Length: 147
Image 1 (tube, rainbow, N blue to C red):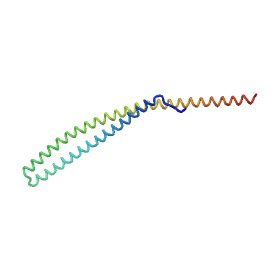
Image 2: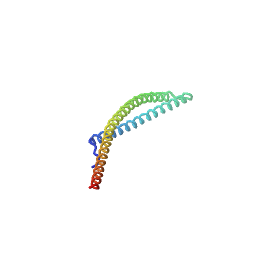
Image 3: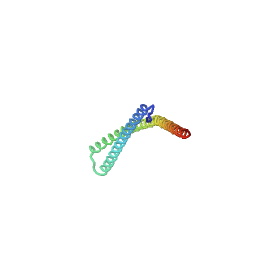
Image 4: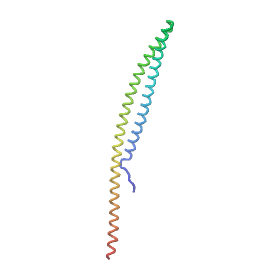
């Protein structure tokens, strides 16, 4: 009879929870990366618009164009501030998911170590039983040769 772990269902359940936590952490990381990329895009657009406004001020720019640039720059500042808040929120979510993943992995490894210990005990008992059987066979053969 082969080895059968007494807590196999618990091990499988904890493995499932660990895999789910890995998926959630990966998703949180991707969303955080996307939020950071969006922030970079907004900051680059703001920077380019500011440079364009400065160049326009060097040449002849109408007040309507200056007003449009000013409105655009103010809008971009609001978007950047909002996106920074989004990045901070995503960072917190990713940190929480990382913490959850570490906890799930720890719980899984505890049961995995119990399984390894049980397997070693089972293998040792199997070895002892095999040795006992070999000893009995040896005694039986040795006993026959004297009769």
